[in-house]
Each structure stands twice: as structure tokens, then as C-alpha cells.
Image (tube, rainbow, N blue to C red; front, side):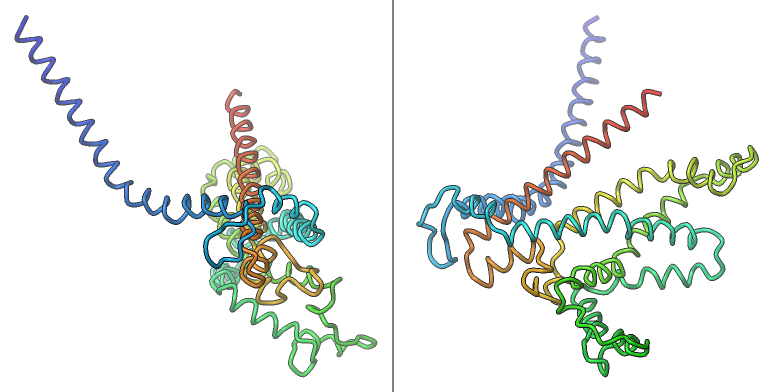
Length: 313
């Protein structure tokens, strides 16, 4: 009896020791990433929260405590409301135009389209370019001088048409920027949709066709439902990307003319690093963080609720 007890105790101790070693190994590998996360993410967020309660120019210690005045100013600033509205408009356009276009191209390129490999490379190429290069390229295309801008050079060939100041017109500038964003990022979403299509078993589609489903029914009843996870992912990435968009807009217009293309990121950059109102800029950054975090939590909870609902059947 004692021997059996000792053997069971030894086995338990060996298992416990192995679990301890495994846990120590996991901690050892995660520790460097965790330290970097604290240094480059958590600490800057805490620092921004601290500075958001001060009227601080970035020079010397923050001493002029103003409490919630920076946040009150954000809520009453017309330029901030316009920037938020422009961001929401880009989100709506992305969800209604950019993503459906990406999905349609993925359905064509990812199936039996002749030369599909060439088209895959062609459509994905804009995403490889940096935002600065993309902005400079399209600034050349939008140039109001017909001798320098391709779009105006083509436009004046149409009888009765005159050169357009695309980026200088408050009514056109945001739409022109959205064209650039769509051109650059739809290749990423197309690639994600193509990966999702490859994970759909061909046998399911063939079975639906044998049962009499036509192309439209196959798309709406089989392909799109099985792409649900990928579609939800692209929606999530598209919304967060639109809320944080900066590089293309800043290089092309700097938020102008008269705040017609201002978004949250350019608004924050203007006050933080152009006017050196770093306390106010920190408050704007925290508001952006709260908006993005709130959307992320609400969206993920909605997805989990849908998955739980579908899993119950």
C-alpha cells in the first residue's frame, strides 16, 4: 500500500513538475513581447491620458492642469465634428462600395477566369505601394493643369468639359480621396476573400448545383454564408482602417481645403505637431482610442452572439 502511494505521489509530482516547466517555457517566450507591449503601447496610452488633462505645449513639464477642458473643447469644436463625420462617411462608402467591389473581383479572379493569376497580381499590386507613394502618384493624376494631370488631360477631350481642381474643390476632394483609398486597399480585401473561397469545399457547391441551384442561388445560399467569417473580418479591418486613416490624406490635402477632407488622425496631428498643443492632441488621441475600442468590443460581442446563436442549431 505504501509503495502504491509513493508511486502515485511520484507520478503526480512528475506531472506537476512537467506542467511547471511548460508554464515557465510559455512565460519565458511571452515575456519579451509583453515587455515591448507595455513599453510601446500601454505606457504611451497612460502618458497620453495624463497629458490630456493639461494645457501642455510639449516643452518642459506639464504644469497647467485644466481637468476636462480639453475634452469639452473637442465636443464643441466644429472642425472635430466635421472630421468625425468624414471618417464615418469613408466607413459607409467602404462598406457599400469598396468591400462589394473586392468581393466581386475575388469571385471572378478566384475561380475560372482566364489569366486569373495575372489579374490577381494586378489587383493586389496597389496594396504593396506605401501610402506616401500612392498619394504622390494620385496627386499627379489629379493635377489641375491638363499638361501635367492625366485625368484633366482626358477630361478636356470631352466637348464642353473644363479642367477640374479635384483636390482643391471642397465638394470633390473627399470623393477623390476615397477613390485613392479604394484603389489602394481593395486588393487586400480581395486577397482575404480569395483565401476564404479556397476554404469552401468544392463538393458543397457541386451538391447544390445537382439539387438544381442556379448561379444566383449558389452565390446567396452557399458561397456568401460560408464566407461569413471572412466578410466579418474585412468589415472589422475596414472600419478600423477608416477611423485611423492618415498618410494618404495628409500627403494629398493636409485635411484641406477648409477642413473638407479632415479626418480624426489629421486633426490630431495638426494640433499635436503643427500647433504644438500636445495636451489637446493627447485628448483627441484618447477619444480616437475610445471610439476604436468601443467599436471593437461591440462588434466582437455581436459576432460572438451570432456564433452562439448559430451554434445552438
